[in-house]
Structure formats: C-alpha cells, structure tokens
Amino acid sequence: MIPAALYPVFPWLAGFLGLIFGSFYTVCVHRYLKGQSIVRPGSHCPKCLNPLRWWENLPVLSFVILAGRCGHCRAPIPWRYPALELLSALWAVLLAWRFGPGLAWLLLMAVGGVYLVAAFIDLEIFILPDALTYPGAALGLAAGVLALHQPVLDCLIGALVGAGLFWLLRLAYFKAKGVEGLGLGDVKLMLMIGAMSGWLGLPVTILLGALSALVISPVYMLASGQGTKARIPFGPFLCLGSMISILWGPYFLRLLAGL
Image 1 (cartoon, one colour):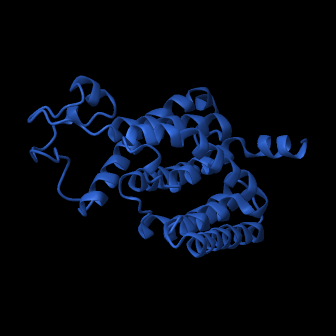
Image 2 (image 1 turned 90 degrees about the horizontal axis):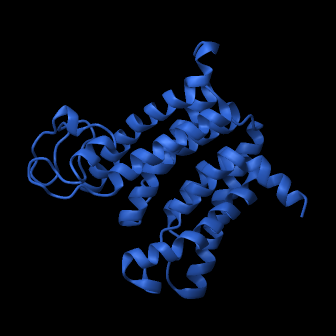
C-alpha cells in the first residue's frame, strides 16, 4: 500500500508504470510471433539486429523521436509498439481512478496485460496462446474473488458457463456452416473471463464484447484491405468487453435492469 498522501498522484504513477509494462508487452507479442525467448537476446531491431540504445527503449517517446523508424537501418517500427504502450498506460490510469492503489489494481493490471498481449497476437495470427489463456484462467479466478469480491462459487460457475457456451456456439456454427467460426482459443479465453466476471456478470461482458465487435469490425475490414472477406478475430473484442465490464460493469447491469 502507498501512503495516503500519495493517493492524489497515484493515477500519474499508475500511468507511468503502465507505459513500462506496455513496453514489456510489446516484447512478449513480437517474440511470440517470431518464436523467440522473451529473455534473450536483449532489445534489438528485428530487421538489422542492432542492440537498442537506452533512449531508443523509452515507451512512446522513442517512437516519436525516431519518427517511427529504427535509428540504425531506418526500418519502420510496427504500429503495435506505441499502441500497446498507450493502451497499457490508459488501462493503468482507469484502474487507478476506479479502484485506487492496492491489490485490486495490481491483479487487474495483470489481467489487462494478459488481455492486451493475447489480443495483439490474435490480431496478427488468429491464435490465442495456451501459455496465456490457461494461466489467465487462474489469474481471472484470483481477480474475481480478491479484486472484484465475487463469491468463489459464482466465479467457478462463470468459468464453466462461459467456456461451455462458447464451445457450444463453436460446435453449432461448425455443424451449420462446415467451417470454424470460433477457435478453441476463444473457448479457453472465456474460462478466464467467466472466472473473473462470475456467472451473473457474463451477459453484460459478452454483450459489451459483441457491441464492440459491431462498432470496430468495419474499421478493421477497411484497414485490412479485404473488405467483407477479411477474417475477424473475436478474442480482442471479448478482451475489450471484459475490460469495460471491469471498469463499469455494475453501471451497465443497473442500466439493463431498468430496461
């Protein structure tokens, strides 16, 4: 716990830490995509392999200073680097405002880290790695109980219902269309999401994920250059729906109850 006198500045500190964590997330995503260790070698340009100088490792700021290009070979730096760093910082600040400093902030920061890394990998190669979803299920259960104060039984039921529902949807789509509409990764991700939201929070979380997909999918299709033929991963939208639910889930529950 930080001293009470530092509470007013905690969102600023949280944002700074979020940028640092985000920089680490970029390493996790890149090296998973390349099949490399996240430990060795040290930070380097993936094109020319030159080690990065300290000032080339500053989150977001280095991207701006270098105008989005490697300082050695001038190869373009992928957009996901500053995007991940900024999203991580935003998540950290929003959690700080919503929950303040403490165990809840720490656990939910870890949850957001899993979501961000998984989402960006899914956007690139349409895979949600088991190395994230399985440990994420345990993390989701811990966050649901210790950070969101859900009953343990509700969280366990939420995990089973969430994963079971998406497994059934996956099976039904395959039976109807003969192709996979949902991957097993989405089913495993729902173990984590359901464990954290609890079974009562699942409808709001899934609804928010679906709505975010409806809003963002057209942009994704345009950016891909493939139009309506573009494959759209659902994992990132499930992650986004869960993150929104963590921050404002009770508000949406009350809103739905009043309809």
